[in-house]
Image (cartoon, rainbow, N blue to C red; front, side, top):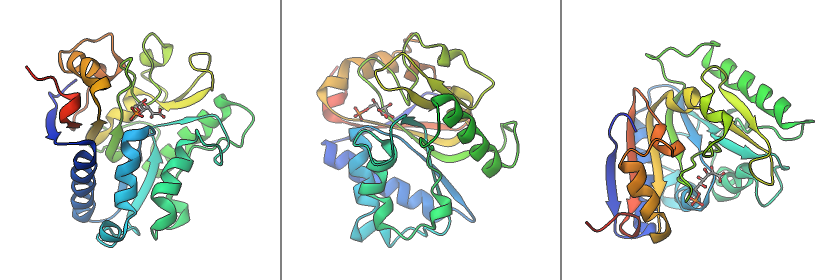
Length: 241
Ligand code: 6PG
């Protein structure tokens, strides 16, 4: 990872979620105009979303400034239990006063994952106001990412050709997992002021150590941004020695 990540170690998964949610709330409060948050799927962020959408924190965020995006999505209807949109919607979006046009979901009600990727790229370009990324002007204020036990992040899986994509911002990922997916590519994910990895549980310990050790065969280890990388982990996910 470049730059070297700042690692925040929490006592427990619940503590991790609270720390990440408070960090995000504070960050959102610093935004002068719009604030773009790129959401992740996975179980670890779900609790963070519940806290952001909960009675205490949701009042501290000016949702009129927030724009929500997704780093990846499964090519399933938004009502499907595997939908990353549904997860974030149930946990957070349904409970906060964000204007609907500021929720930029990856559309899956189209013919193909290719079409979904093309539409999402257009959505991002429209929001950003350009088709080329300016290193001085990140696309996202914050990108949330998870870490899979195989080292994947977003839907960038080991060995997938999506890892070599440097031009397109969004690509379909077909034939890697049972469900096709749509993922943002490195250039788009990396165009973030802050990238936050949320990593919890002893089953992540070995892979997190390899990522931190710089094993470039792991997609998560290859994230390189001009912004900052922060890893919110719980004690169980961090090696003892
Ligand atoms: C997804 C994700 C994925 C996830 C990791 C970690 O849609 O599955 O975006 O990259 O973040 O698989 O998931 P957990 O937090 O559930 O371990």
